[in-house]
Picture 1 (cartoon, rainbow, N blue to C red):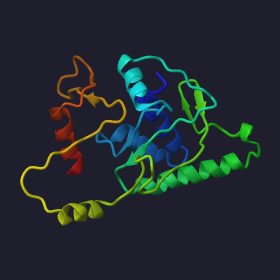
Picture 2: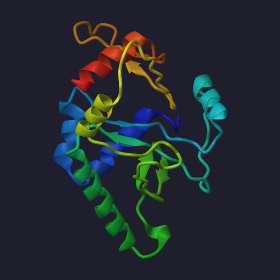
Picture 3: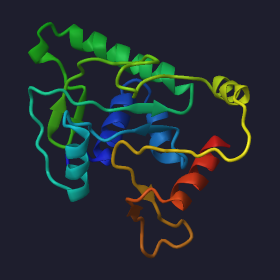
Picture 4: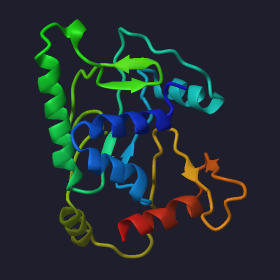
Length: 195
């Protein structure tokens, strides 16, 4: 499926490998806790239609004239300079080629090649999907709030999200992925990542 997160995940690591092969290998093999996330390929469809396509697991073809988005979230500040270097190196190597038709693909998803159109990184972007903060700023924003009693928490899973339910102690059945964001799948992993 073109919106499969695994394809985007692999393509991003392959792209990062050009700038920092040792870090890409470390992120792929050595790190059990993911220090980044990537979204599925986001189709330019209304949200309701996109959810229907994902839920029914329908093949949805890519159209060359359209623009597709991915979201990359870095949870380790030291990854940002590597991301920037990979992006800068890619931009310089593709602009040296001259014509836009001769540019190398930014990413390959299966047999599909995608070109880079733009990178958006700003707080307050209209899409609501971009921004940045530091751990210290997050802590300060929470300390500034008057917390008392129970406050409801709402999490929105805007793209298909799965939870690896494999068990390191029992490999007999292999990995399997839960497609429901049940609280006992979400919160223990968020707590581990926070710690």
